[in-house]
Length: 639
Image 1: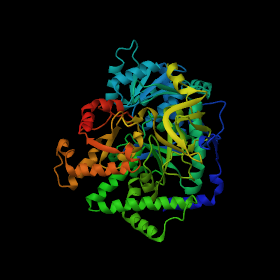
Image 2: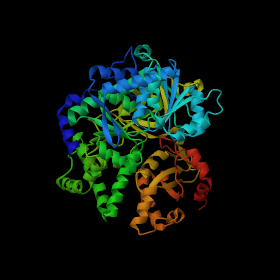
Image 3: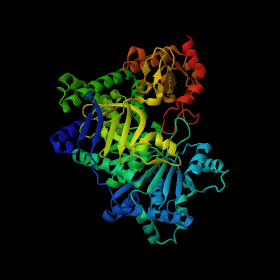
Image 4: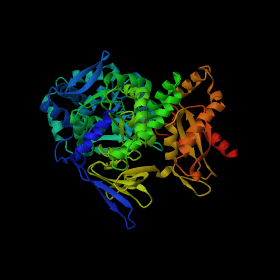
């Protein structure tokens, strides 16, 4: 198994693990209250992120830094070619009237052109305002008006119609270009008379403190707020994570790193990932969808060596594996492989971390058997070359993490927010610890407040919310950003997130319950789609659960039921309720009896962006769900 060899090789290279050290600070009781890591990357005093394409073109013009899907094949894009395209589009933006400091909104799914536009806007001296491709006209209206963006680049005709509708009432609606209608070509033609010197002049006028982007939070409640991030913020995030991770992966795996980027580029994690890859000259490909059926073929074609994703992705890959096994009559075998994998990975990591003896002969033999039957199929689904993944956005179920390790893929968890330029913590590459979200990113400090809230300080932390000083003052004090999340630090400075401060439920019996633990474990088990745990001022904890459509279709097929069976019958079927109860039992294993889910209801609909119950970053809008299913919640407590 590749990752086992990597870890053995890494253990012999103690100098790699010693490249970064975490300092912990304890309170009077001896509990760890703060962890901090020194920066690994030099803080720049001049220049900006806009310089990256030009630095690459000057230092390694023939290096392949991106691959673009054209006519069904992945075509290489060299550093020199990318810089030329960035300059050409930047000239077009200048010719169109973009002033230094002006803002350009980009409303598109993840694709090559988004990356070109991001750097072109910066090269022209502007600021990028990302907009989720699924945003409504009302959301677009607010973001364009609040940010003051005079230009918008959309992806599709539907996106363009949304922008037109949303901004129709503006005194001066923004000028709009559409990628599907040749926006980059149009801009290139428009800017052909703009001299190269104008782009160079604007780009070199930027400094680390110049605003690079205004990223609007996806907004689980209330109106989205625009996080102002500077080029220094983006550099602190990208450069320090590259210095932490890339030398280790390169030395230990001896692979040429490459990744398929499918996270929305409207989300800060996708943006900083592409900056980090360009900084390290890691090959990037783009995929516009995170839906498993659309992503899997792209993974098999591109064959990345690592991925950055969200728990949803890993949950669905696991679920797809089990569904495939069930279809060929090996569902029980997959379940045994799951249990064996968790035990094997836990034992092996204990040995690697000098905390145990490791797997015994019988467990090794069981792992070897299921590697032939199950785990290698998981690797194949991910392209066959992948050895590492990084998961962020929300906690990944520990057992699911261990399952992937047994399958030959180490999943490193990270934690961060838009306000922290993406990751504020990450599991270091040679010290895996499933169940935690890692140690502070180099140059960052994490503190636990008296009430358990996670506070973050460092170069990655944003400076303000755009046009919203009151909201800024509410979360930024003495350079510490109050995240709103609850967590704890262990003896080695690893952070564990235990919930969201505003989401804590207090039952009528006075028990405080963090719904995140239960919800994360529930979603990791089929046939669960999304869920919301309720119980505030109620006698016990309960859950609203939606079913994953693919899991339902598979469930019906396996049981010989018609594919068009109404969902109203599916949610009442005792066999389906029994399957869901097993998922609930698994979730309850992580909490006390008083915190456990005592009742649940299966809802017929989905929680998705279209009905306003999910954000574009796949977070549940709790208030919206509770309002939409108020009658179902009352019925849970009327029994």
